[in-house]
Image 1 (cartoon, rainbow, N blue to C red):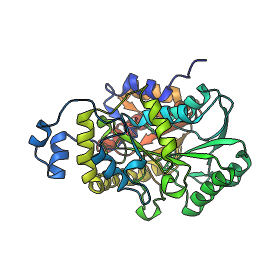
Image 2: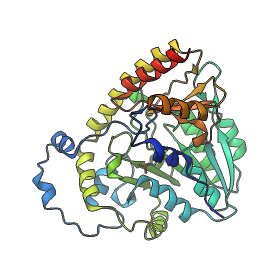
Image 3: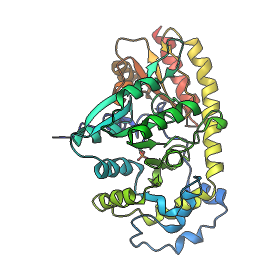
Length: 372
Ligand SMILES: Cc1ncc(COP(=O)(O)O)c(C=O)c1O
């Protein structure tokens, strides 16, 4: 059996480094090494002494200490450093699942969260987010309760959610964890966008804090604006499962890159400042988006995100894919068709984490005005 193509990555591979206006990025504005070191107050020379040997498979102890400090009830032994966040999805699913296992996946979703599980021959059911006619998305925890059975091995969620920007309330999150715990299932909690809550008070406890059979995935790509470091990690209370997952890492990367680990240690020393910088950019861009979507309600159905850096917006056109292809060829503005993420052909993803969002939005507005 072949794994399905990774539509989102294939789409970005065509346009990401050529289209001038990336209006659908999921990462937040990045920075140079100089800027990161200056923010952290670390001199350049400290990088010069870094040895370029292999690194520890589970991740550097210093880095794991800094990561563990982000959570309440885990320590460095509960952290598995990754060579890429993406790797965390691949190796966890391989360590945890057998063909025929029952898995519930929140949909739509980032491609690999469902494709790897399907590839492994699991019985996959979709727990779908519903679009609210008044705007935004809603989650039916009762539906999850009906989908989860005593045979369910794993439930896969991602909050704040890519692509909708949905964030459950604390009560909803507690109810989700409770449903999974009552079934004795594992919970894979993709938290790549955690820290990007419009209202920081609404940030949820991490999966690994909430449940002993939860596996949290996070990394520096989105909230912290450092996707080029490719740094990610898993956090889980169960050290036996951690060792099983680590066994799969021997077949993917063995260990992370030494320069990335060192820069990630430095970045985590200023993690609050990095996240605050990203939140400020997203907030400014969302304010512009609010006005834009009010002006263009005849074309788009604005589903304002509650958290994260992306939104899945309704498009009143025959085909979102055709619209996006025409838009990028005419103007260089890139929107991601929702179908890439398992949504339908009437939605597009916008991303709000980049500083050049206003110029891309202005190009889109000009295109819409001239097409009227
Ligand atoms: C929900 C989610 N999980 C995991 C990843 C993978 O992160 P990375 O590309 O940094 O490996 C992404 C990237 O877009 C994502 O959106």
